Image 1 (cartoon, one colour):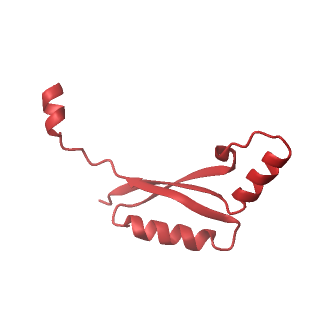
Image 2 (image 1 turned 120 degrees about the horizontal axis):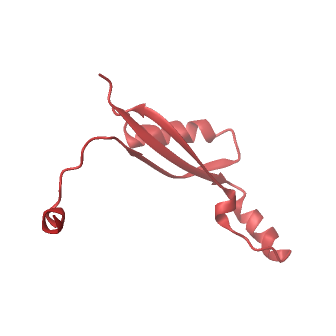
Length: 88
């Protein structure tokens, strides 16, 4: 069977600095989160984080957006840590 992973990509406009300057100049409250977007992807677990980041960079290169943060996770069970045993 194919093991999958879920990847979350956060990206924003490359013009974020201009939006911030405009907001400050005109007395608007600037919130960076208003200009950030998130997309999730389900991919094979064999794809590395570097491959996902390269794919995202390639996908966004013709736009006015840039990836800020990318992370991936699988549903593999986590092994308990020493602190988990202490709490149990």
